[in-house]
Image (cartoon, rainbow, N blue to C red; front, side, top):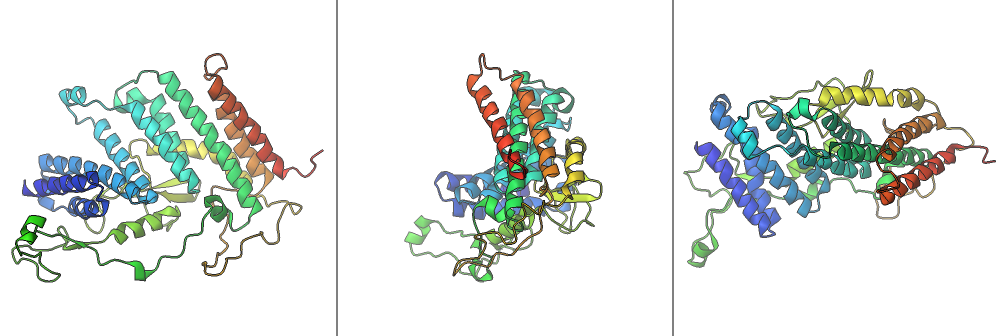
Length: 413
């Protein structure tokens, strides 16, 4: 009982500081609540009631962490914790363990969850993490089609929601077609050009000393009392792995950087629970987008994963087959322009073409066909009589798709 109460107190203190715009101070408490749940003792895990209370509190922790990291201009971490919150939300509402009274009091908003998936995919597209973005969009599409089977609820205006998903899917494949062209124009530097920035390598000198807990408030300090210094903590407090004396923001940043490239050892197996620390595995899974080819994603929806994986394999089968074709010699560039680093900037190293991209016309054509399919599907709902703005935007996107594909054409006549 005390464990869950302390965990909840850390959440409340973190939220309080964030509401006061003290996001760094709030993270000191939220990270502690996060660590407590991940390394909670067996006594909590084996008690069904307290384990559920701890899990519910952890969902709030991730929600607050997403807000705090966003306010600190760390969009990668914010997006990852948004995805984890959505994963927890989906598991909690589709497990079948909630009572009827609880479902009526706090119903699962399937429509809002789908739109959050579509919105979150935009961030990963901008970061050139196209497999993650596609995973989110297919998850949203499947939720629309099987909402009653998955969560037992059929949202209102389902046809409109399906049209939104088809439009967003079409825009995704259209944007990915532009990414293919960028990679073909700048071999080895496509991702760098796409992101539009060059991030300096991480330096160990920037690592902070971490955050500590202080048990003296401002009023006490005014009376002459001081908070204990490092190494002079109260003997009544026992610091351990569950309740550490110091927490570091850099630990999460390192995890974010490791996942940002969507790479990893292919020999690893996907785990849902467990780990070396005995804590719950983060919402990270492996996606097999083609036979023998896998990427690790920072997003993982256990309830939908198998269905999403099958759809991605089916949708990208033609692209994967055409991806190996080389770029025509007439279009190949010996050295991309503007790739030399300026003075004071880190040297940019050529990287292999990302697995989600291809350099040939055949690869671009397969991507064009996918984008065209979903855009025309969206046009069936967004007719010009009633949805003139959306209709025109889709037509403009179709025009841009033809213009992008034209780059591979050798004979412009």
